[in-house]
Amino acid sequence: MSQDKERVESAGFYEMLWDCDHCDTKGLLGKSQRHCPECGAKQNPDKRYFPKEGDAIKEVVGHKYEGADRVCPACSAAIGALGKNCTNCGSPLDGSAHVKGVSEPLKPIPVKKFPWLKVILIVLAIALFIFLIWFFFLRTKTGDVTVAGHRWERVITIEKFGVFQEDCWGNNCAPSGAEDERCRMEDHGTKQVQDGEDCREERVDKKDGTFEKVKKCKPKYRSEPTQEKHCTFSIRKWKEDGEAKSSGTMDKKREWPNAPAADTKASIGARREKARAEKLILEFQGGDSCVVSEDKWTKHKDGAKLTVTMKARSEAVQCDSIP
Image (cartoon, rainbow, N blue to C red; front, side):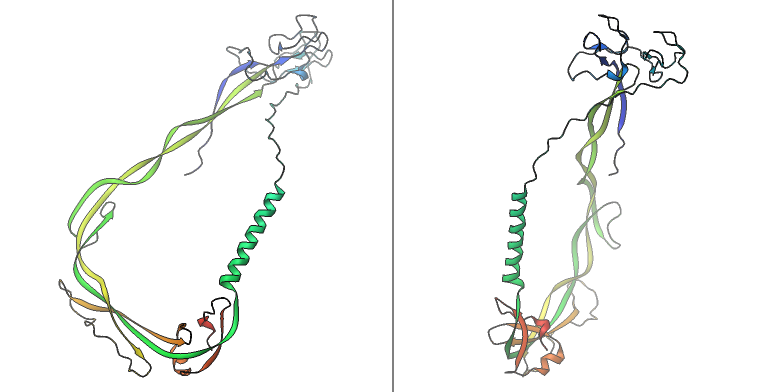
């Protein structure tokens, strides 16, 4: 699923707060109290701050944001963005700078000490596990084995023609030649369905004595079963139906087992040859054995000693190392 775009909406404008530098009056309103009501000192716009979470704050009803306050170059008073002259001292505001504004600090993430001891123990445990796997299962050595015998196996896979019951999912899914097709809608898989939103709020200093609450939401989803057409049908075809086998030693002529002809015509109950496979096996003293090529099977006689690679612990022969 592609990542859903975050939905952003305004949750209203609220007044920033400021503290008087002169009489230490605290929690004054940034938009409606440009001067301290206790001593008359002008607001220092650089000292505005967000209210604490949960504290009562004043919403600016019908507020229209027109731009960040500017600082009077003569008296340093904060003046609305559209003003041409300072309302505190009358000085022109041409070329005056905007107030700095503040950003809401992110909640600090507690710094955890890195668990060096735990990491070292995990690394040592993994290293020990790898060593044990190597020691018991992968470690090899060179050794001698003695050929104890030769054996061959021949297998013919057989298939049978009949009427078989099968099923499939989807519209028009049954193959050509299907009979007695029956379909119905059934649960098959799931789909993601929107189930509300996960939302968070951020506070943005508008630099005019107010801040805006911005609500940011992303959709969340739940899984629901989906329905799809499920069809059952009968079909006439060839299907694998067992094997015919023959085997023997080197002193017995290699022959294929009896099996139906490969060109048998299709009729209900008819059987035919599908595929043939042969294995040539060298057997070693101790019970181990390997499937080998024709050349190796005839090259190494009974009683011959071969130098091979074997598993160090089980002494099982690595068949690809047979010369």
